[in-house]
Length: 224
Image 1 (cartoon, rainbow, N blue to C red):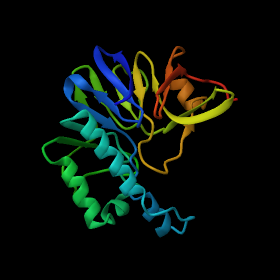
Image 2: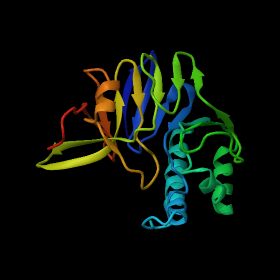
Image 3: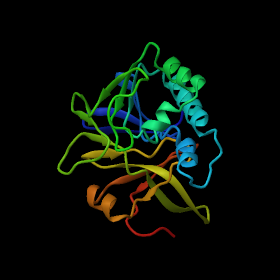
């Protein structure tokens, strides 16, 4: 299991190459913006189609992370489904897969802007979740400390080995962590966008996802 280890709000954490955040002392795995059912929602709304395997791919990666970490608590930071109809349209084998992953674990669905309110897929449904000095919510709020959120799908572009690399990325500073989108086919917002630059402190760090997570100072100008 590869990851970038760091300390935040008095807790030991690991930013995994997959885009999941692991808290080993609490056996807790946190993911954000799964957007399950994205291909179904786009087809329903007449948008350009996507290959219809994104839900299975996302669940397969999540299952691998759960196996590797042996996490007993899972927090999904909102926008777990592309909309309510997409959640309801999941195939029966996909719903069973979700319930199998939940078995024997505490599972928390944080409400997002795409999926407000309870869904009939087991687990707890909360607006936010607090654990000691940490608060898990979907969208970052100003003047917070110990906050872990998602929503913005941050991505970062850097020069590496003579070429430009763009990847989803964690954004980390002394007050907050913003997770990358975990779901397959989710887009991203560049770290130099005004909303992310305004949220993150000057010395914020970006950790690019991938087989070897790459920590860099958070870029605040357009990439190379």
